[in-house]
Length: 309
Image (tube, rainbow, N blue to C red; front, side, top):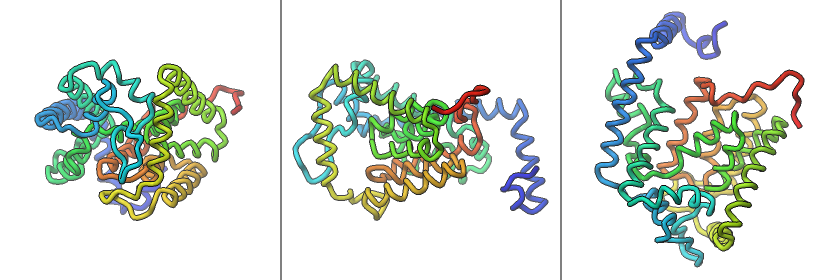
């Protein structure tokens, strides 16, 4: 049975597509692509690490090792560390390392995640211009999508993995917060057990973190309240303020959930970001594993006779 895409293609293009898919499925070709992925990962890592860009990763490191904290005074724009205390507590052991070692490990993990998401697209290397422009992860569009070390890519991975492990949604709620609207997927589909797991995991993390440092949670609430009064940043990639964008994202998620169009979710959480920065567009790459139907993105099969709570 041809797919919807194949039905749209003329017969010659359909044959070429099938032949390409068959070729890419050969074991020797898959091994070659994996080798290429490893080589490119090393090249990207070396390129980005070479100038030690002090972007978002540097802010995380400073905050985790106590050099910076929440900026609770009302100012003209968001400043300083903006995520929940739970995130910074989680990376605290890594932040005990010197900045150079922290950045080396942080960047290595980011590049590894990038290659994991985009590895089948590496065959675009046969067309160098296309590859450089649209390949492994839009490496230089913008170049600081990788070198800044922002958590955007991990957020995309969280929403993708959340179909199988709903607890991953806690990462969205405890960092940039508003993309947590993705939980609407479980509400529309009446997957109450998955919703309970996501919210329960979040609540458990908050409880443990609050016991460790309650004052930080009060500071974070102040920061969130202050942020709601700030105008949209001049560098944002959108023209609508947050509330209308959240409404649009909610509609996207509801429609996607109704039709089980899981690939829409990374797009929706980009729309739902507090503001859409150029580096945040890297989340869109997480559409790829959903379109491919990678096993780790699929919901766990339900046991016979099991029902949603």
